[in-house]
Length: 313
Picture 1 (cartoon, rainbow, N blue to C red):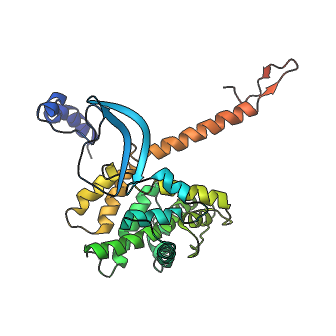
Picture 2 (tube, helix red, strand yellow):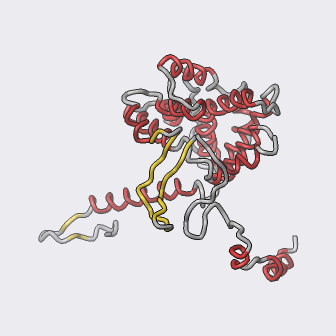
Picture 3 (cartoon, rainbow, N blue to C red):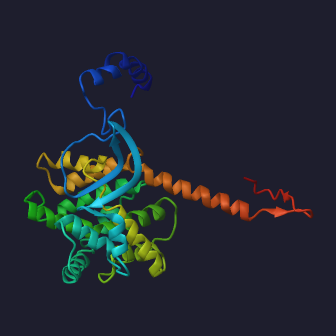
């Protein structure tokens, strides 16, 4: 390819393709999912979940402490109501899917159903993941979910009930798909030993993620409980976030759930959407590094910090 020609042509193209910002306001066209004052653009109505980050006072947007509601129930109430349950995420998923909190019997039957669908199809791992590892876990998830289409006897059936069944099947397999994507990546690109644990049907999703992620399969109940709560908080964030909006747009064409889910993950991969999680991880790493350096300072005889070669902050 003649890169010089493309670069030169690309430099000229903005003169013919750019749209002045003032035209968007003049024609009342939204440039994204936010208005100029920072309020959200209404794209539809939902009774599933809602994120409240601001209020309108005297016609002006006023930021308030964020709140997250699932089916009208605040997330803090769901987390507090979890008590010692190992299946907080599963209970939350039931609420989001069916509109009400399950009874103990319904939750037990739902978690049993998920456990029966944890395992990937025979040779799926070998054919679709080990032989084609990806540097990026999100891309690997996209490929894997799209590959599940070929294992479905009626993949293009978009009947609501059949779509629900397919969605629950995908949901049950996501812990394995995510962890195996990571294991394949560090094995192929980082040259680490490949360790594969098969999911345990009696484990919650949070427990299975930790079990399959760790080489020795060990985890504490406190770790599992914390991850369970994190999964609850990330279960849904309203119909207007980018990846959910992507799912709505794609599925409105009548396509299959595998295609629409794959498109949503592609949206979530973008640093302006799912990148928030990466930035949080980087922030935590920076804080840990800072605290480590401070705790490893040494002092001279009169109590002044001594340069150990590790640097100071």
